Structures are given as C-alpha cells and as structure tokens.
Image 1 (tube, rainbow, N blue to C red):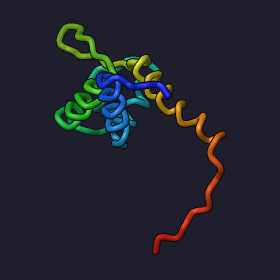
Image 2: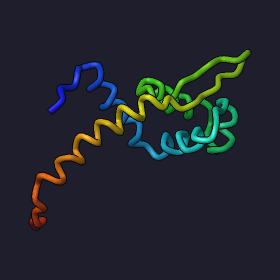
Image 3: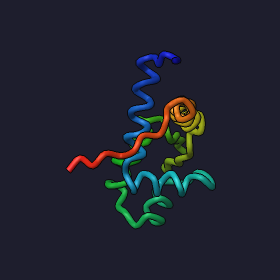
Length: 109
C-alpha cells in the first residue's frame, strides 16, 4: 500500500471536511461552470458575504478552490488538481472491494 506523506494526509482530511457541508457543496457546484466573484456567489446562494467568507476560507484551506483579485473583486474557481488527489485517495479503496468478500450486516441493537 502506498504511504501518504503528512502534508498530503492533511490535504485529504481538510478536503473531506470541506466537502461535508451542504453550502460548500453548493459553492463547488456553482464553480463547475466558471469562476465567480463573491457577490455572484452570494446572490446565487442567498447568503450574506460574511457567512460565505467563512465557507470560502474553508474551501481555500482545503485547496479545493483558488482565488484571484481583479480590482476590488475576488474571483473563485475550482482547483481541479486537489479533486484529483481526493479521487486517487478513494480509488485506493476500490481495489479492496475485489479482495474482500461481502459480509452480512449485523444488527447492533
């Protein structure tokens, strides 16, 4: 099995944490088409800029989005290489499904 370096491990953890919130998923869905400025994201999602800023910070820290400043506006876009990192991490588990036999679920009550 491939060893994961600590920095990569941190990115995986922060990536899945960032994906655990419905509003952040909505942001990512909007950014699939093209980059958007904060005001466009706020309008599309019906949230305040202060609320959205918290979620954008989480997405940036997880390297799922990039930002660029153009004048007084900040534009956000997807950082696709980080999605590849998460996809490759999950793909490692796919190979186990062929090795492990299916087990019946046990009732834990």
